Image (cartoon, rainbow, N blue to C red):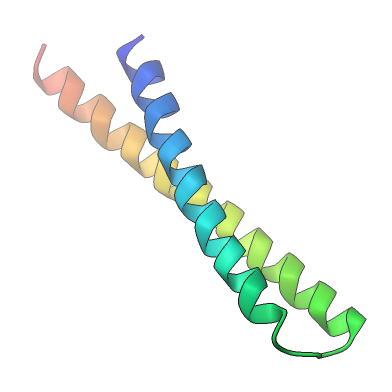
Amino acid sequence: QSSWDFAQRFSGWEIIRWGIILFICSLVGLQYELGENLETIIGLSILVVVIVIFILRTEQAIKKHTLADSDHK
């Protein structure tokens, strides 16, 4: 249960953080006219990269938390 609670808290804050970063990227993107296809490719690429980073960081934090939790028992 401890790992589950930690994962929920951690991933919640991470998704907020990455959401703010994506929002800023979209505001920057509004300043440039690159063409619909290129804008779509760039937007989807950034989204995929953010999702991969989010998953990797969350998994890494869960492993670290689980190891630390098992050391205390």
